[in-house]
Image (tube, rainbow, N blue to C red; front, top):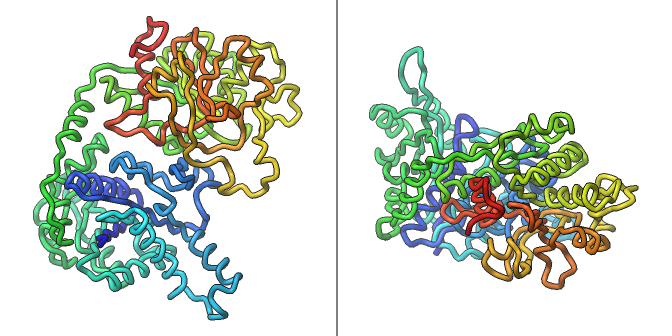
Amino acid sequence: MTKFIFITGGVVSGLGKGITAASLGRLLKQRGLEVAAQKLDPYMNVDPGTMSPFQHGEVFVTDDGAETDLDLGHYERFIDEDLTRFSNLTSGKVYWNVLNRERSGGYLGNTVQVIPHITGEIKDFIYRGAETSGADVLITEIGGTTGDIESQPFLEAIRQVSLEKGRGNCLFIHVTLVPYLKGSNEHKSKPTQHSVKELQSMGISPDIIIARADEPFDESIKDKISLFCNVKRDCVIENLTLPCLYEAPLMLHRSGLDRVVCRELGLETPEPDLREWESMVEKIKSRQKKVVIAIVGKYVRLHDAYLSIIESLNHAGYDTGAKVEIRWVESEDVKDENVHELLNGIDGMIIPGGFGDRGIEGKIIACRYARENNIPLLGICLGMQIAVIEYARHVCGLAGAHSSEFDANSPHPVIDLMEEQKGVTQKGGTMRLGAYPCVTREGTLLRRLYGQERISERHRHRYEFNNAYRDILTGKGMVICGTSPDNKLVEAVELPTHRFFIGVQYHPEFKSRPNKPHPLFLGLLKAALDPGGRSPRF
């Protein structure tokens, strides 16, 4: 029978519930348990797919095509398990499902209410997550902050789960802030006490309190929290701000979190084998080299919009012993007259994905700069399309070449709308989403990087390489190095005369892990660290 762990947050947002959940998942996995994770978000959007990156950060895509919260990226990177559509639920999705069921007569004319129908939908989702994963432990994070009106149905639902499954099979973890007041030179437990009181008013008494603080606090603070929040003394876990988020599992293990969780849930497991994780953290701390990678994007004001790309670069840096310094370049600011000033001194470049025509010409200029100056470049999704557009214009002589997404009247739409997308009017969840196979071409850098003919990567896009221009671009030296198995869709392109110049239609950043860097990011950094080379050394 699956054990359920529910993680809530109090006092303020941004306390690291997601990192706590992910770290705990890793610790339990290293104890030999099968672990799955969920994120329940209280916002009314059906999913984050149509939300602005400035509002929400990146949209993380699962293998089965779900557009999800970025916290799921943390779960996958820490736990190293592929999540599914049963890993992320929003209030919007809950109400959407309930109202559609009501319209189709699914409730047989009964009055539809928050309890039991909304809470029932949430519970069903939690139970399906446990059932489909077959996990020993399901970790479910509740988004938002305790006390928010939006979160109340989710809190009521998990209260009901604990009643239905039994308190011995459910565990409540509450992450709170323990602030430090410089004026009095002391930490304060009162915000935690008030947050727990708020949670208790919803019928939930936390079993474990994760006390978030920037600096270590006195044992007396733990005593207060234990006494006034009615939790065992060793169930007050100190969670300190760390220079590297991948240290979090080790810190929480030292604080006894996984031991206490297993005890409270009656799980008999061996001590976790953390040697691989400890070795990885040591590699992170011992990096001596430095590499500068420019990210030329349109959402650079919010770095979380490119969270998985940042982490993927870091993962490659851990493996190569390099600290990655990111130069954030707003693509809208890039002009012919300032491109050298903005990009001079970089060791490599990434042009990431995005939607809309803002900043597109700046990306094209940056791409040309990388190509003409032999700067290693990785184009991701829109970034691959940019590479194709730039090459078509400046090497193939196709004046006005563009994507039909940005210029419907382009004389040379080298990027065009997918045929199956032309009748689509709904924006949400209608793109090419999730994992698709790709065949890598023999003799290409792409094949050498992956080391295998057939790969699978995750997609999130509507537009594709226009096959009508294949012969023109390949005739001028661009190599189509990856295609769909039926050869109808171009998945990747490269320039063999360049040190490292690869564009991929998919999103490799979603599959990178801290102890298993993605081969494309690893290749980019190896090329960036070898400025005298003609191609990366593998």
